Image (cartoon, rainbow, N blue to C red):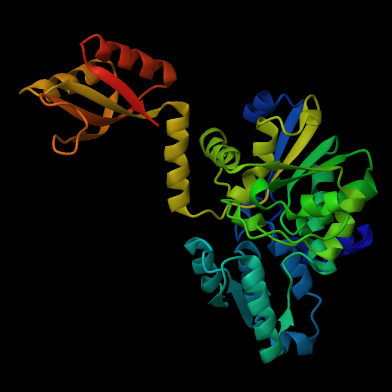
Length: 404
């Protein structure tokens, strides 16, 4: 078990080499979640975009001269890779990182930019991990585990120590869980100092291996799952982290993919913060009522990382706009006569909607002879505006339906 003393030692060892991330209040989300106060610990603002560099640096600073000369190797979905590569590069330690083949390009590119050799292997973290062990044995490198290592856990636990200075009256801390290194360190720092603070973990329901392990009373390996929270997609948690979570964590809840995507969009739109799926699961749990005990409490939400592919952000924004009714696709059936398309666009403009895309095709339309079905994608002000628009078009004698 990692101790509070080890976490305090890690804080002294790391010093100012890791950014002390801010923990501001969020009035927007306080109202949305009914918390007494809600602070966000912005680990997405770290130099490498995530909390992982805390543990990585703590591990690197304890290597012997012989171990430094041999170089290090790790398996990572991206954030541990960047944290280790960045600090190893600053210290002149040769680094190899094995990443799953579907790791977002931004994480691969940044890891290479810090000087690490990147090997893409496998469909998930566990397959990348097996390849990293093979390379470690072949090249005699030092393996730096992303979560199942006391020095890594202690480094991540420094976040908990910072929270006591930034939010001394907190009642609850909500933390993402993948392999469990982050929550193990944070929970130890919090509980050993003030046992009354509740620590709640959040996992993606697509691959909630730690929750399944706790429910079974032993380590469980789940089938590989697909989630936009790729940073916490771990099939089997660690034995160190499993024991620490059993001791220190009060509860673990899960959130689905739509809830995670919506939380990413809310953070971007309302807090102007770019947060990846793994970092957004805590907010997803709070706004969807997964943690009812948070109501009326002073809550800290840990935003663990911000390394998200811009293509994924684009898709999330579009889906979010559709869900909110700010982007809609309508199919309008109308007489196939000259000038009808102009009339349709004029009616849309008069209603205050904006045309994004319009598709007019006779040959492949299901409309009858003498009719045409026009597909039009529009920007609107919300669901009420859509209903108003559809009603107005219907009054023209046109058949209007919404594509979902």
